[in-house]
Amino acid sequence: MDLEAIIINTDREKLQIEVIQEFLANDSYWARERTLEQTKTAIENSICFGVYSGERQIGFARVVTDKATFAYLGDVFIINEFRGRGLSKTLMQEIVSHPELQGLRRWVLATLDAHGLYEQFEISAFRYPERWMERTAPNAY
Image 1 (cartoon, rainbow, N blue to C red):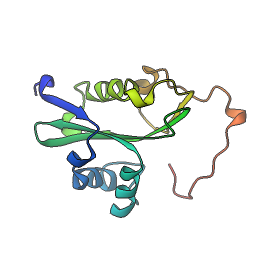
Image 2 (image 1 turned 30 degrees about the horizontal axis):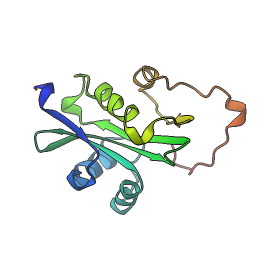
Image 3 (image 1 turned 135 degrees about the horizontal axis):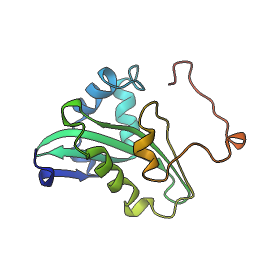
Image 4 (image 1 turned 90 degrees about the vertical axis):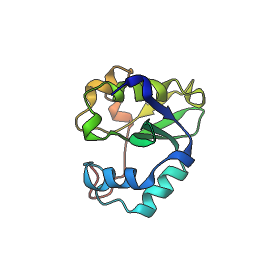
């Protein structure tokens, strides 16, 4: 695979919803119960980053944000056959450098296994966990 041929953009029209839903429902640990309608709604209300090899979508991430102070990063993935090639890092570089996501006071996310990736972008455990509270669904990861 030629990494030069990889394209990352935020054009929602290019997103291949069936690829995103397939990964989330079958390959993720965090969104297996998410419906197609929920996925579509999440995309409509986020800044979305599609990762493409030619015309084929091979990755995705989305950011929920007020574009001034706060961002939640979610649904980050590269499909299995393209992993191990630095694409997650390239995707994260695109996300944190996006013009609409500059100057934010806080980024948050949840992960079971990608701490090393996110730490490269200065995302770490809560500095003040005693200040944070959450309300989660019973099946939240």
